[in-house]
Image (cartoon, rainbow, N blue to C red; front, side, top):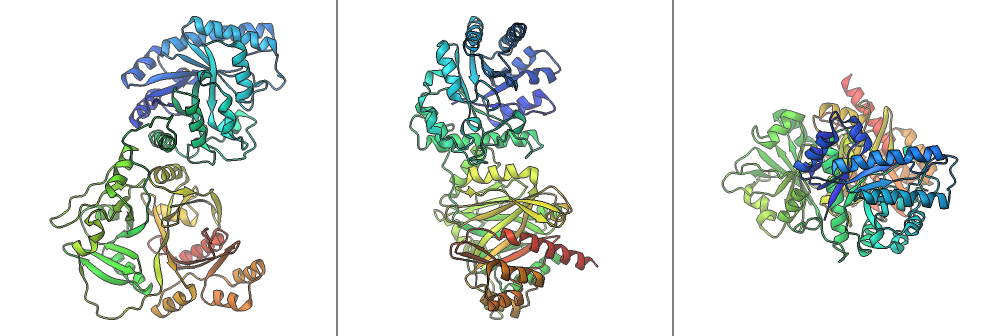
Length: 626
């Protein structure tokens, strides 16, 4: 299977772009005239560099505004065609992508357009090359692949075929089944990009909204399956249309490769006509829960964290046999407190201060999880282990953190018995009813969200929601939730652009993106709240005005509203579902805990409450500095 990609517009060096494309794992590239214009050298050098990296130049794109209304303009178009065919041969490409006019007054010229395409086909064939006609939504005579196919079949020559872009074909809610009428032999090139479902189409080239596969809502798996059944055997090419989400060329290219391979792998698992992009690539990993969350601390922050855990009614249950590592537990929640002065946790503390440095997910097969991540370009994580310690399979997270995997196929699930000693109970600590980790929220720069989202959704069986804009008193935070199919593992990705926001202040103190809050699930928020009050938990104070508005919005009875107000509990509703939230005050430069209860199948995260919570957290942090 041939995997190609367009170059990244605006990258500093064409050679750097080629290097990162080859390093990511692609075998081919799409070049365009602007690539050669910005390159300070001869086209032959580009061809040699690509060949030395094992890259095939799959297409040269585009011959824009191919047709013209005037006779003199027609002559100029064909002169330009000859120059581009010269370049095509020089760089070693075989396929020229062709688009017709986007002129506002163009209505199509019928037979004249067919004559021009026939002439183009003759000239391309004489160079032992071929042309792929692509329909662009903003061009006048050819806006759909159906219209383009009619012209290709009217010419009926082996040197003229179609190119398709998935985002252009499927935007506006067009079903991929419409493509079944395309003869496979007519299909020369396919570009893959994602976008919003039902977006109503794209009117102008500068309004394109294409994103990496898996980041939008288009039915790309079915799109790929249908083309494979048609007999398409050409390259599957990644099309870059939106570049806001990453400023780092190597990162964006690696993310693109991961997204493209994951899409084709998913399609190949259900479509016999499609070969797999990586024969030995394991399936996506199904995470069944959080096994533990690990904090890196020093002596001072150790005391602060463990006191807060105590007020949340956690118990120190185990101590590592040879390291300064403790296990604090409640229900199925395992919090590891690591104050070692050597090793990864110590390095993480030196870089970020007290923070979450590691999390472990429960999976069916830990080694398979690492194998898939590695084949998709994620680095495996290694750390020396002492005699008697378990070597837990792990990979690097996107922001410098680590993700470990625990399964029941080995002794990994006996980690706490093998490496830890039980701590004698000096006093009874009644639990507060915290059952498990509901979700983990990770904060990052908005430009990094693409990498995080691609990392999680291509490695694990996780579904995403749409990005939500959360109003912060000092700006906007972009939040996207992803979760395993049954909600065993939920993650919130929060992207920030302004450092003045509450989430932004967290990043100021952190060298890397990281976990900013952990939410624990309760079966009875009011019973839990009573336990937390007795244990001395300091919770975030919510202003009274919130509860006045809350009663009016949801028509809640006075007794419930007073219970919520007295306990500083936030409330949300979605259909028949209800959601309750308690927040700790921020600590560790903006980290905090949350306690939640879900009722009636509520699946959200209280997005309506986020502005209230953020304002309260900023006030708390400002007051604590006075």
